[in-house]
Image (cartoon, rainbow, N blue to C red; front, side, top):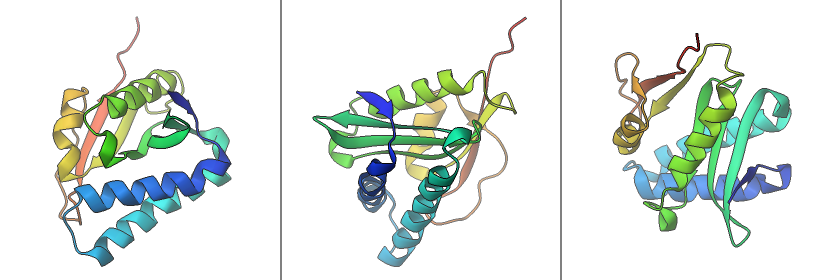
Length: 152
């Protein structure tokens, strides 16, 4: 079930992020640690700016098994699902919920993100399109954009 993230979820969200990165990003442990720290920084940004973001968790039996964070309603900075729950539609549900909520709030009328190599196909299936050249960063850095349809 999708629910708004709570401040008391922060440690669970960061632990989930660590499990997902260690499972999906084929990099040395110190590089993975840096990626986890960067994602934790985004969560702490949310902690300081809760009114300028969309942050949801997906719970199964009260355990956090998925999370999505969209900073300033346009910057999708974190989307992770516990590896034990991959391929069950959780990421899809989280992104659809975030897109629906950001549609009216995004100052850019779009959602931007940098995908890992692991997530490129997923984002393409969700309607995101490439938005610039990939950069050679740990785990891969593939810029994508989802433009909200303009209403007449």
